[in-house]
Length: 542
Image (cartoon, rainbow, N blue to C red; front, top):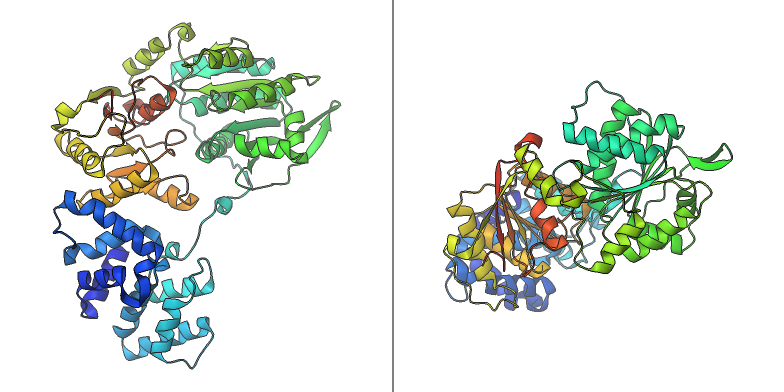
């Protein structure tokens, strides 16, 4: 909102007609018609103009600033003409004293204390934009923009190791969670192998951490847990859960982040003739796999010395996982091995056979004998209000006609009509959208924002801290809609989600990927979620 207001103010205070300015920049002014950002803006304009009812080849003046910010997001300062526009406004609209101060500030950063205003503007506009530099931060200071507009974030902002601290209270486990913890404690204390099958929203991570920490002090002399997850969101979810639970169960336990390029110094020692380490090491499947292949000594020692291994999303990467577990079993004293999955049923028979081999046909579920009929476990959790009631809606329910062939991606206009009708007809407040591509997700976020629905987009390239901030905005209802592609299927928790739109065409709604998407909206009221959640699933719902 701040960026939109600044651009609007620049147009007003510099007496510039917004569409005339943007149209000129996009097509010929100062040669910016060939700039990649110009092409991106033109592309988004073509996609959103018709659904929003804009005139042919134009944007209403009052929509120009929202359109720019919705399209470029935190990258508005990467676009040279916008930098010049905003800096010019900041300086020209200031008092003489403030203007002189801002000029000196920018001149000192750009290295020439004597250059005139015009030369300085040209320097700011045409010099290569280098995020995370003093120059970038100086521009943000002048504009009163948050530093997030000047930096390129990396996952390195998270520390490699954290030490938990003791506090007073911990919420009680439910009956079914205590059953699961008991079963898992038995497996881990005897260094056996099993897979926990528990629907999303039922607390897989919490119960697993409880079981491990209950066993760790007495059985393993304080340490040696290796937690492997498929995505960085799942890695961080595990770290945060350990940080919280260890405050009560095992204070002062070191918890290491071993993903995203981090290489913390883990102290290995010998205990009863066996190499071990104290604490919990959390790593990603991809990172561990690569480091083991490259002969990284820390990764090799983790594999050789851990007392327990947890494999989150255990149905993924099955070929590598099979060989990894086979290596663990070659140890003189193999560790306990626990797999976690919300979607244990596999469509491919060979995958089921691999899971059976890896976990010795040992499955733990929220209810006794639940492994024989997983739907019974889901129905039980719904009756206990742990999971929300699922309500499917169709295009007929929404009053939408789709012209796209079932095998083709929806047009942006069609997807927009689905989502906007979904939001309005059902009066939904918190909607998660799984798009068919990164481009579709971005275009929908722009279109929905301009149509009055606070929306943001996420994909795998979204920097870590921005991703976390946007997810927090969605959780707190500062965003009504969050669009994404291939990023929020796992490791994502927004309990108040009351609508999920799955735009990927599918003939099988029971395939694991679709089941994971559905699971994002099924957190029930007992765990802070909703009583019911509405779902539109393209194919199944059409």
